[in-house]
Length: 126
Image 1 (cartoon, rainbow, N blue to C red):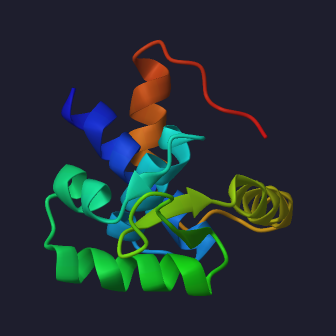
Image 2: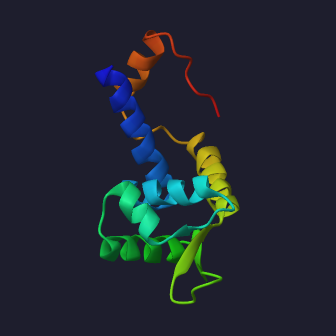
């Protein structure tokens, strides 16, 4: 089980790196994506990721500069903001990175991935 968790962490770090983010920013972005049409307040990702509201402001600033999210005023209270994701931009960047990666050797060691494969899981193909 430890190897499976390690492989998951490596995958998360690899995805974050491909998007030009750190893992905490990626986690917040994932919550915004998951919310879909139900836009989150800035405080909701802070609660879920267990960071302060000040820290989530920095995270949202980075995500906004990268073009992955936008802030919108809340309809009934203009002092509050809602966060919306640009999922298509992340998908385009990941797709480009994956296609580029086919021409390069991966930078991670295959150890955890081989362990996952030997445990009966099929390896992912792109």
